[in-house]
Length: 327
Image (cartoon, rainbow, N blue to C red; front, side):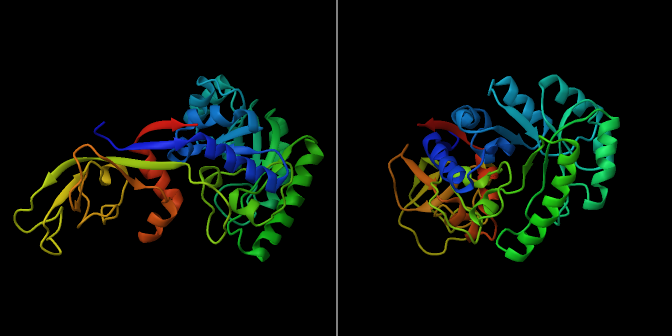
């Protein structure tokens, strides 16, 4: 294969899910948005469907692909609807949608929905003072409200968590006064590890794939390893090493078939000399042609080298990979 290959351990994802579910003590809504953080949403969903209550995705398109793949669980679309076409497709595929504002609620007529509440993250959601009006509007529109949720903006801040939890509990109580069976969910991976209130369900995302958001730690197993082939051995000539002047005089260089076009950072990494090329990186030494080299097995460590997060690395790198599933 000319492209790098991501080996994804479904066994590790199941083990991570088991650990997080045990910590939370309530059913799991597994977040498989953005192609399961680069791990392959359809394959991951099939592998864990027997362990979860439902799935969560970012968009109607993502939800439609899961339903078409026959995952056999409800799918919640976390991004609010923005058009009649979104609503038509959500209805056709039996998706559960998110109503987060009065404009988005208007597209939810007759649909199954969860209400998003803004408890401080200020991304999506009705403000607490809007809940009563939102419930009245939902009734007029015959929206089938099946859940209510919010999101912790800094789960390591116990004061913020307490304030958000209190606000969410009050809003959820209002929702349940009109829809007694509405599922309440607040905590994602960070909230679970912080010991936040689980309510009726939790929504782990990053933790499923083996990473705890800083500053938390947990016995999670990274589920993706990325391998690239040695495609060239070079007796150095001239003064360069990739897109940079050589840092020293090399006796041998080799090239791997992986670069920033596959989601890696152009600034470097993977043991590269100089900056990455779009589809290649140059490294010191000689390796047999065709050798498969592991270039990523810890997205958090790689992210730290480049001032970002494991989330960004997994999503970006996962998009550029051939995928092979193990276990």
